[in-house]
Image (cartoon, rainbow, N blue to C red):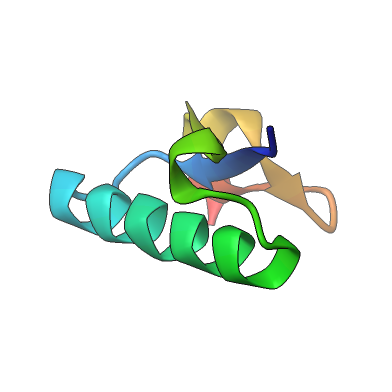
Length: 61
């Protein structure tokens, strides 16, 4: 049973997350020959204050 965890900054629409889950499930299923019903997707959303690149928080850009 593949489990895929996706971490995103908050701000995506429900429609975008639905499309992401559908496409990730299809990609995993096709790539490793796993039945789609056995593929689990976890989306973790974080606030921009909790993510930084090159020493700068996303919320501070």
